[in-house]
Image (cartoon, rainbow, N blue to C red; front, side, top):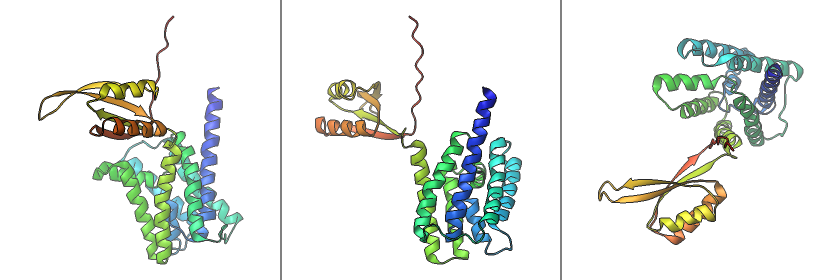
Length: 283
């Protein structure tokens, strides 16, 4: 059973990597898009050096893996090494099978949108299997470790730098579309991975706490946590309601609170995932 699970994981990772390579080759390459990724940079560099996109991608991925192992450590694992090497190999196969590829849609911007949508599917499949396609993830980790830049911001910065590098060889329209594609890819990936699990944590301080709490418990049918809070200036004690709600419950709660107590003080946090494993009740 365990070996079957590993085999299925291998199949999923391979499929995701092939999908990413196909999306890159059939949407990015023919439209000369440099959407924030190592392959995007390879597309730019292929105009400056006598190498193919797959060859440049392989060289950069191997280089980044070596740099990563030296300066970051053995965090990447076999899965990331496998995907980093498989991606340029699959690109090379496409280059042989479909040379001089033309745009499927015939429109650069539509190619960009299609790339942003489909690439997030492949990346999400990798992330759910605790793998990645390497590349800019390694750059992001280096920036995070040595420049203390938050990892997500570091990867986004690296992606935008790649998108802007298209200015070296392409016109302004291509540069702008590449930047838009980089931004959209990040949004689509976040929504694809976390869209179904995003919730809101609402903290409420109100003089009508009892009414609000009853609404939460009996109308929203949600749980809540109460905290004792002391005002730093007055040192008065207040009761704070903490509740986690989904999108529809959040709108109902906000409407009720603002109607019941317009002076209520609320803070709202976005939560990507809630994990709850109740213990079995012994009968």
